[in-house]
Structures are given as structure tokens and as C-alpha cells.
Length: 296
Image (tube, rainbow, N blue to C red; front, side):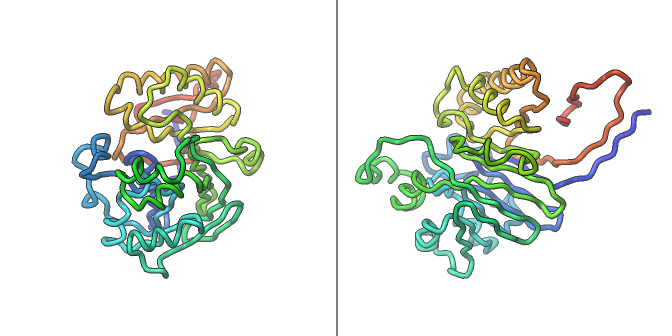
């Protein structure tokens, strides 16, 4: 009889875009870049029949940046749960003005900082968005169709915060937007996270034939354990076969490179747990295993 021992780090689910719901062991809930539903043009690529009614807690909202597809559902979360909103200090007052958030519910952060919060520690790093040739005056036309003010959407291109969440039990999760921004070098050795949540593909509306290769080669250089891709909801909506093949190809490339790290594509709105596991293996079998919905 094979033996298995595990300890749960936290429970989580991917909702859409860069939006994750994370339930820590102490009962606190973090929601990142809230965008899970809507009635505007963004709703086309949201999960079906999912709304604020499907969320039962939110203690912290944590923003990577302030584009409308990362802030769309802040109003509902603020009204229902009155959470602490964590964002770059340059954006925090515009967020308060635009979404009517009490000043005492704001938690401004800056690059290269360490912040001690209830149930986790947050380490922040400078990040950059994908390049845009839009001048400030053009934002009104392009970003005026998105949730949030024009100012917030403009700030979303200028201020991006990559960060590592370290739970009280020591599990480390990197949340990373578009570009590498030196994160491979910054997170070497004992700073390396166990899990990477990464938007490394081109913008989610673009199907790039080199996505699997580019994504997998970055993760191979990072040499991590597990990576969850995010912000490819348009692929899932418009061409799910393409999305699935990208994930398969990434794992194949990592295996060919002799890397033990693997990609974990999640089903949106499905709950998962991140666990530290000890599994008995057969003599002579040393490769990683995949069993059902578990990736070890």
C-alpha cells in the first residue's frame, strides 16, 4: 500500500485574467486584480454565470496594476466585504477617489519593500507592462471604454508591482505580470518561490505561435517547481484547443530540457489546494508524477 503525507499551504482558485482568490490557513482571503464578471465589453471572456455572489470573503485586494481588466470588480468587493486595498503608492489615491474607498482601507506599497500582513508577508519588486505606443492624450479613446478612470488606466501602464507572498508556514508564491524585469536574478537561492503565477504570453487577445516556446524557455531559466499561466482567457474563450496545446507543449519543452518544473493550467473557478507532499514511490522511479487533478 503506497503511503502519502501532505500539509496544505492554502486553498485557491483562478477566476479570470490575473484574478485569483486565495484562502490562507488563518482564514484570511486575498483577491488579486479583481476581474471575474461584468456587463460591458469585458464580459465576453469572463467565466459563465460567475458573480460576486459566488465569493464569500475578501480581506485584501492586491493589485499588480490598475488597468480596467484588473480592477473591474473592485466596487462589488468593497461594498460587500470592505477589504484592505493594496496597491502602488502612486495609484492609491486615484483608486480611492474612483472607487469610493475609505482612506483607512488603503494600504500603499512601493517597490523593493517588505510588508507584514495578517497571515502572510509581501515582498515587492519593480515590474513593467507590455510596451505601448499610446501617448497620454490617446488614453481617453482607447482606455475610456474600460472600467476605472482614464488616469487609473494610464497608471496601469506605468506602475506594475511584482510580488512574492510568503505564508506564515513558509510557502512562497510569486505573482508576476508581463516582463521578466530581472526576476530570475532577484529570486535566486533561498528567495526562489515554490509556485509562480505568471502572465508571460503576449496580451490575451493575441494567439502567438511561439507562446509555448517563449513561456517554457523563461520558466526553464527560472528553474522553478510549479507555474500557473494566467491572463489567457481570450484563448480559452475563442480557441480552447489552442490554449490546451500551448500548455501541453510547455511541459514537453521543459521535460526535453531536463527540468523538473511543470506547468499547472487551472480550470477557472475550480478550487485547488497547494500542498507540501511526501509520496511513496516505486523503487527506481524518480520522475515527477501526475495523478488525476494533482500535479506533484
